[in-house]
Length: 229
Ligand code: GRF
Image 1 (tube, rainbow, N blue to C red):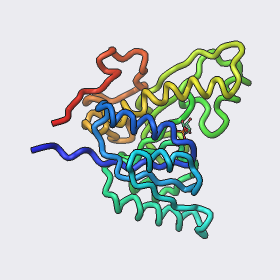
Image 2 (image 1 turned 30 degrees about the vertical axis):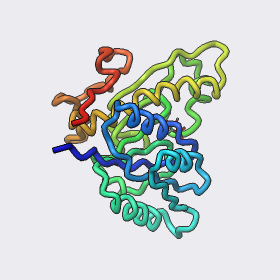
Image 3 (image 1 turned 135 degrees about the vertical axis):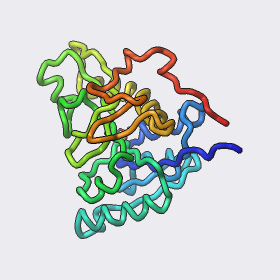
C-alpha cells in the first residue's frame, strides 16, 4: 500500500522563496510531504503565484478585513484545519499570532527566522547584525510557541559576515541557507524524527539542548531519506 504523503499547509505573506524551496524539494523527492494549501494574509504576495504555478491551492485571508486579531486567527484556524494538515509551516508569515491560535497548533507548527536565535528576535535582523559588528549571522528553524521567535530551537545554519556586506547582500546569503534547512527540518518532522515534548525540541529521541548546526551534520543528513513507498 502506498504511504499517503504527510499533509502540510504553508503560511506566507510575501515573496515565498522559502515556499519555493519546499516546493522544489518535494519535486526532486527530497521532501516527502503534500503541500495541501498555501495561505497568505496579503492578497498580492508573490508566493501565491508560486503556489498556483505548482498546482497547489492558493488561498488569501486578508487580515485587514477583520475587526480583531482574534477574529482573523479564528478564521485562519478554520481555513487551515479544513485542509487537515499534520504540520503548519510559517514561511515569512508576517503576523503576530494569538495565544489561542498558537496553543491549537502547539508542537505542530514551525517557523524560520533570519538570525541565530535567541539573538535578534523580531524585524530588521540583517541591519541589526551589521550595526552590532557581528562576525556571524544565520537562520534558525524553531517550534512556534507564544513567545515571538522564542520557541524551542531545532536547526541553524551560519554565514560569515563580510566587511562589505549590506543588509541586502547578507539577506541573500542567509536566504540561501534558509532554503536548505527548512525543507530538511520539515522532512524530519514528517518522518517523526522531530517532536516538541515538555517545552523542548527532541530529535531522534534525544532532547536538543542546543539547536542542530547544519554545517555539523554529516553529508548524508544534508539530503533526506527517499522514502517514496
Ligand atoms: C525569511 O527571511 C524568513 O526567515 C522570514 O521572512 C523571510 C521570508 O522570505 N521569516 P520568503 O518570503 O520565504 O522569501
